[in-house]
Image: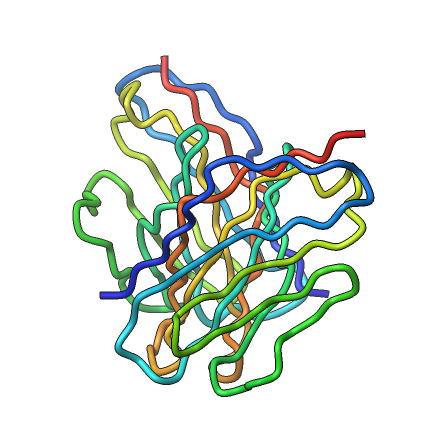
Length: 116
Length: 117
């Protein structure tokens, strides 16, 4: 069974600074997808970034980038130039590409607070 | 595109009654829909997966007779909490998957807060 571990329950960062959220996962699958989702106080889940395991290049989306280390089964999220609107819960998630249903397995989340 | 709605956003019901939550994909056809439960300050727990026109697949530990899921069309799935009790109070989130191949991206609804008194 796959597991996703986020070891930082809470983090804080000053506005405009950079912060990195950690995520590790365990799987025996070779083809899978990894995601970072953001859940602000509104509780709407928002996709931040996605990484396909077969791609060596790290995904980037504007101020958000990942450090994907497949051998180490590590998938960290870096947020540059942090903004107050980045304050939210961040969930790392795994999806087996070979699975027929496309189930997401979530980590326990990291609560990020951006301070002015 | 890829908007998912849920209705109601917040519902209060009395213990012993049933409540239905709707999940709709507004601008795409959802081959698969997922129902999650989220307790305060916790992660999302997958309850069940539903495909249009077939029975839902429930995760271990989820009572299928209590949480009835119907995926009647490619744009609508419903979750009915039967004989609700205070311990069923929670935040319920649905998501919908578009297509059957590719990155399997899920689009999430805004959630429904259920309070059972």
